[in-house]
Image (cartoon, rainbow, N blue to C red; front, side, top):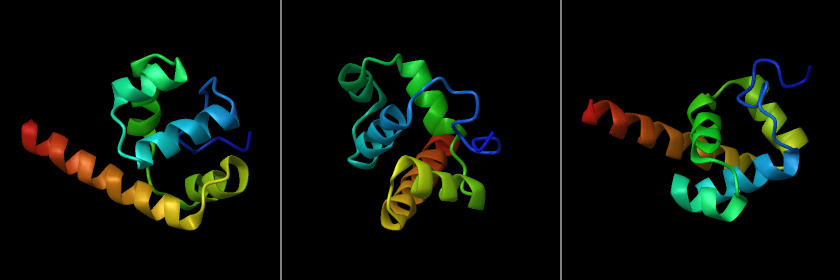
Length: 91
């Protein structure tokens, strides 16, 4: 259960699929664009991204198991924070 406490816990995606989704998100692709590229439903993608929170266990998993670099993780945290701030302003 190395995914417990991470965003990918109980997600039925392979490491390659998760890596691709995060990398496409880092390239500032939209959810629907990622959906078209990966073939996964937009709800699956948005739940993965929405559930991603910065904590040590998630970052370790993303670096060691998924293959993201520390720099990509930092960029991911920044993009997620910006996305959350934007959605708070709309509410």
